[in-house]
Image 1 (tube, helix red, strand yellow):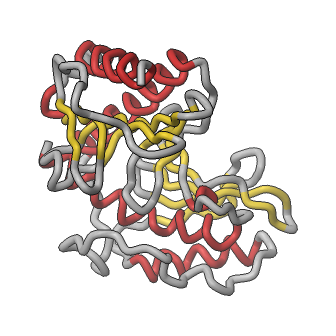
Image 2: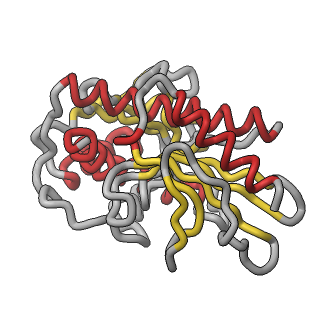
Length: 261
């Protein structure tokens, strides 16, 4: 898991450039969702929302296979490709401004800091380094599984919501309003001190008050966590295989418990 976490952190850092594009050019939403990103396994890239420009719709993507940033037009043809390897964040942003100008957008604010801070990784402000293929493949496999798990949760709950990666905490997640009284959040989070490893999570958000976690259903894998910052169930990646069996049971047990609240 250490290699996966290291890859996660480096892609998290790179993704801040995409978040800046969303922050600057996508129509603003109260919940900050204009900043969030999509992961497209078939393309193996992270992408912003579509951006309206004088030249038509465009979006910025980070191609995971070679760590290139691409400005794409509405047919998904690249009109600028910028390698991030051995360049600082500022150097990459400055090169991407050529594509912004070409699309007829204003450069003002694009390189401004985000309104949140990410962890102070040891490599911050250093030139981006390429990651070996094995580690990139592992990252892709887990994030693809996260998308598939979100789809499974939506299927069980008979819901259709966007699966997005939030650039602040860099979790792949969904939020489903199960009823007028309860919403459920589910996703894959980065490693943190609470879990000690990357982990799947599920948490309930009642319309009023808080949920009583004193009578939770026992989990076959994972555990319930009730802390000041989080209340719900977590399943560290170290406890599951990529066969999905443990994850499937985790999803079903947690959803059944929340539905009965």
